[in-house]
Length: 181
Image (cartoon, rainbow, N blue to C red; front, side):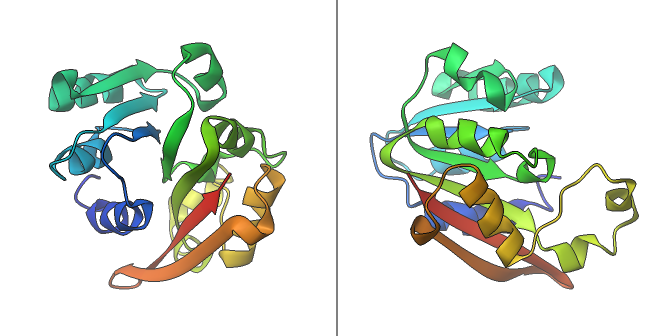
């Protein structure tokens, strides 16, 4: 999956514009690929990652060593980790599992310092509707309006949200969102 997600990760990290010294959380960090890309930018960052899979956290820990603080945790449990506030929170390929009440997105927003930014990536609804595994009802699907509405439901001001569509692979469209607290 790291290979398939490399272009969306690069798009999201370009939009994130990490600055030296910033505290950055990758929510749903998986194998740590996005954090490794940030680490490779040759600046000093304070990197954090959470994933609910112990196996993924173990792979990320092996990949990143002591360069990142990692935990096996649900997004709703971020406050109990006492890590925040963050300058940037990444939500790459995780908002598919957000609840309709906006609690997951609110937890991500609350982990940000005032003026901090959420950077999110999701595959566009029109692409995902062609994939059989998404028809099982386990994934929330988004077009630009749906994603904006979900971010507003999670507490972001509509005026602070910017969403861009990108071709990320042949026949695959993605949405990259930037929302400021």
